Length: 95
Image (cartoon, rainbow, N blue to C red):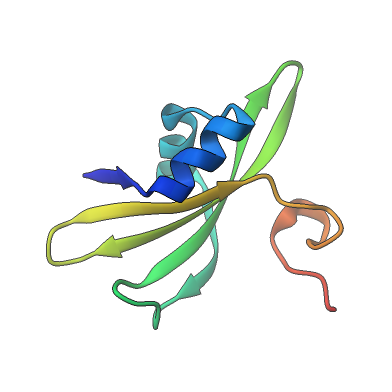
């Protein structure tokens, strides 16, 4: 089961990102960071690419997984900023 938190839905609406695109990133993207100590469930940051006209747009999805119910919660969705991320949007730049 996939549940979208209010913040994620707001960000998706603002940026014109669909549920199908987010689901695709979660299912087929690359986990680039893990947050095992997040509460109430461990979370992760996943990088995926969505079709945008003739090119592709990088997309980061933060989600958490409740192992007891098998539910994935989409916490937020955003286009990573090249000022904050290394080439390929897989590593944060040093501050």
